[in-house]
Image (cartoon, rainbow, N blue to C red; front, side):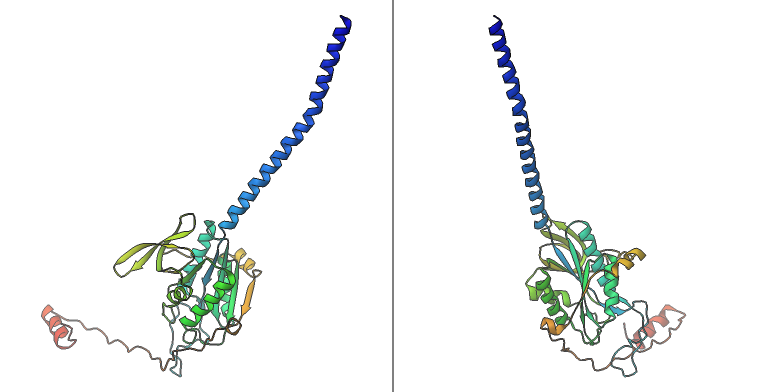
Amino acid sequence: MMEACTSRGGQAKAISQQSQSATPSCSVTLHRQQQQRTRSNAAARSTCTFTTTMRILVGVKRVIDYAVKVRVAADKKGVELNNVKHSMNPFCEIAVEEAVRLKEKKVATEIVAVSVGPKQAQETLRTALAMGVDRSIHIETSLRPDQEIQPLAVAKILSKLVEKEKAGLIILGKQSIDGDYAQTAPMLAALLGWPQATFSAGVEPVDGNKALQVERETDTGSEVLKINLPAVISTDLRLNTPRYATIPNIMKAKKKPMELLTSEALGIDLTPKITVLSVADPPKRKGGIMVETVDELVDKLKNEAKVV
């Protein structure tokens, strides 16, 4: 009996020792499985992030400030540009703001601002950087920005930069307030073969950020379009209200990268195809007059103004 008990006790002790020795192995296996699951989840997150990355290219132009009363130059070849306050084109400000908002919505991961113009255009690019743009590209030229830098040449430059930067969305102001062409965005879309939505008054990402739903201004009201990315859009005044650049962001903008390029390096000829022959002030309006009766008003409209 004693031997049996001892044997059973030894067997129980042996089983206990085996279970204790098995526990660390089981823990190691579970730990390794957890590590593999963690790596798998991280890889899945990494793949997801990669597939949703997009770079936005936004156009910026330096123009005479909208509050300045322009004067015709002495040679009658254009308006006076010297000693006149300049700022970012208002429609370009709206384009920058919309790009920043799309980045805040996680639609894009990087914003690149582009400006074609004289050296002073770098100040305008710094303003865009202070508003939230990540980096900028300056195409320097000595041509007059209001007359000699024309839409087709700018569209060709942007098409080269789209290829260089692998951009997935181009946002431009619908027009500049100096030339008023409103042609750069449509020409760029044609060169790239991309869908376009001009005069945008509302932009919302749809289909998992693979497309945009755009409300655009028309002569008869507004219409809503859905365009697949990559695409080109131009901004109208009702799209948003641009933010002000804060002092801390202005200081940070000084350290953000700005790449300097030339049109020659991109293989683009900026020679203007249209020449301005002369510029003149509009005729001064004559002073109004007061009339005593309706019959006198009708008579003057009919016989003097000849509008009825």
